[in-house]
Length: 440
Image (cartoon, rainbow, N blue to C red; front, side, top):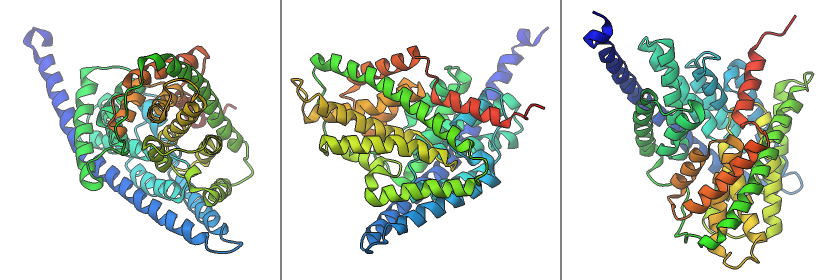
């Protein structure tokens, strides 16, 4: 008799799945508390940075040197950490994807303190970076370590690190469904039960634990947003088409900034990081809203705060460049959070420009800001469902789902037809090229 005749193979598969789910729960607890502590520390760092900025404005003539010195020194220290643990650089998402595809090895546990401290220095000081990069990669490292200690097979270790990475994203945005969708849509590009179940367990436990640290409420406080009239749907589609073009430009700018910095081989990475930090420090001194991850400006826009069009345009242009510039510094930090802020600014600006259209009022402006967050995310990352769900979970608003779906689909269509690669595909290939030995 064969294993199939006796039913041993299905029984072994069931036991393996149960073990994966149990390990995902254990990893989820660790990811939840580590990620929650990371977010709590970032909140404290944001408050301290705001206090220092306010104090620096009271110093005549040379007050601007305070944020310059602060961000430059913190960025340089974060680069030093990356030099010790190179995997801590940038966003960890491309590495998570490469591990799942079998193109590189799962991350070591030492990545967790490197990402935690380096991310706190870089993001907390004011670089335009997202908290999800460190939390995703810390989650992956914790998941991989759990798999190694349980002596799982190499494919199962890769799977567990992927599931735990989704838990890290869920903790970053308090978006459990978005974290699970990220694993299936962006990383594995499949909905296999062996992937879905550990991911769901890990995400649920991680978010529950993180809420014990940072609280149980949506990331953005949004009032009642009326559903835009169906007659405005073509306007949202046009907005989505234009957002697709904006996403293409943003991807090219990120890669261009990275290439520009990589060419400066004679300048030490710590000096490059300090220079970039100094530039961001000047920007923060001039206007704090155009620096940091962008949660403050996003909250203002989806909360109904209005700005005159020139100010919106200024914020959009400055953040369009400071985001890729900050990422090029090579410190720990992600792209998602600044991308959401950029989308909100773009949506608000477009609504202001389209105010001559009948029916475009303050409610539509808020809706357009939320739609812009999801649409730009879709165009850049090419994970439309993940972007939509993350925005819905962060705002707890579902009334704009129809225009959000239409605009995001249009944005992704434009980016795809134009041949623009998803940003993490490009970053993964760039990372793998750097790991390959030079040709002799």
